[in-house]
Image 1 (tube, rainbow, N blue to C red):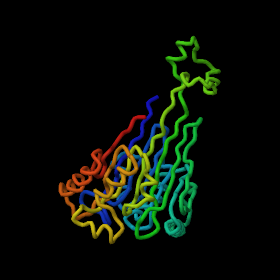
Image 2: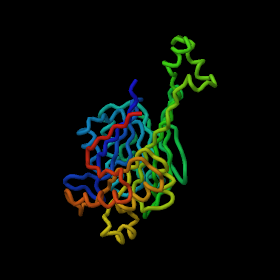
Image 3: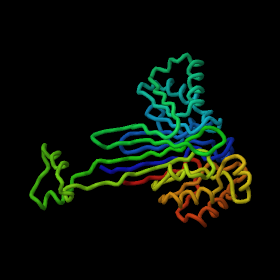
Length: 300
């Protein structure tokens, strides 16, 4: 079975939605059936429909912080899940102030959505197992980021159990059967194909700092805010945001594989945003400036 992870950048703009960039939201799907949303800015529902991602199958939402451009789409999304007769549980992971925001919204709606919501209030570093099937696990980790209010960076990590090496089995005259599981316990590593973990990290809003480097360490993919170009470095520092170059330096320090730049200020219209990518590539070559509804597929 093909093993893949797909990232769709639903909203890639800054503090408020523009004509071409909605506010922050990112959808991650995998071959195991998981659909995870990272932040739910205004317009997320519209982008989900355009990306053909079903509201009723999203199993986890992780919110970085309580600024409106990251949470304003959440109450409407929950209501639409209800209207679409969702009947499976939903995990929501968020800091304390966002949990209160959600509870207040549910109270307004009468708390009758027709499905269970598991609220996980986070603080400091932590981890939650989202999925576990026969040893194939998906965990989400969080670390405090460095923003103007309580905020978190998330890392999704897929840890896959070893697979049987069919070619090696044939060489040894062993054939698949009901007792094949016993070969997972053998010490002979030639019988197993071990798969390295795959990690996608999302910084949310943050200025560069050691906590971010720890969160995104050795990630295969980093989705990093890059609100400003070098010309507005002082503004980035004042409002606890990153430039493209700052994001690239974090990627370099963390020994990441791919950097995706997002959360672009509305002052950079159209191709003006390319300057942010250009400056980032001076520090970290494997950098992509993303746009709304861009899709990236990674094969494990």
